[in-house]
Amino acid sequence: MSSSKLEDQRSNTERTRENYHHGNLRTALIAGATDIIRQGGAEALSLRALAATIGVTHRASSAHFRNKDALVAAVLTNAYERLDRKLENALNVLEAPAVEQIVQAIATAYGAFARNEGELFLLMNGRRMNASGEHVDLERALQRVFGRVADAFSSKGIKKARLVELKSGKQDGELIALHVWACLSGVLVQRALGRIRVRDDLFETYMRDTAIRIAQGIR
Image (cartoon, rainbow, N blue to C red; front, side, top):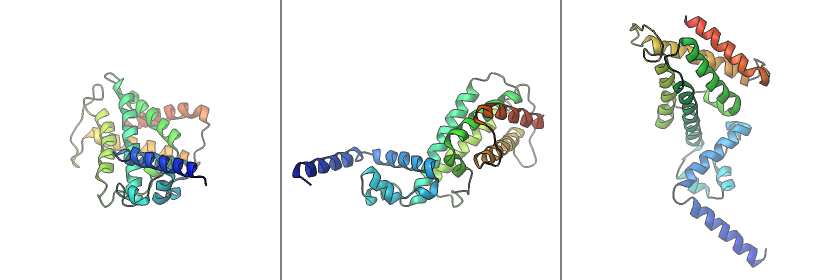
């Protein structure tokens, strides 16, 4: 290698390190890990290989994520935050909606996210990563998503709804949200796994029909 090329390589490496010096590395690691998971699932992810691809040392990446699980948790946190924004946008346009409209809005937003994200969506619906409680940000992001769905079915969200306190301490709105989320997740996971086959051009119609059936069940 010529001295000029060597100097160029050193210069690029220095610029890369400088770019990541002020906090950009964490964002780059999450973005890079997300792309890898989208293409090959969590099994394809290696923190050491990702660091090398980005152009930093494994030690530098370890300063942000001590292991692969911590990085995956950050990826999932980011995914739930993006899903939450989609749900927020879908629900905010509704005014004094009926149950059917709320379920339809949630099903459309959640369905689009599941179809676009594929492997990442399956990872979000796989084994619970935060059973130990150590990934606090992930738990908060997940709860924000469910909380938004539950709020939609609260007395403020449903037109002319009458809610009663259940023995479990949960309100009807939260219980309805749990059932709706479980139904939608089940349908979308089975489709992602190829066990329910729906053509892409019929996907939106399928999700609309699914929402209608769920809403009928709530009624």
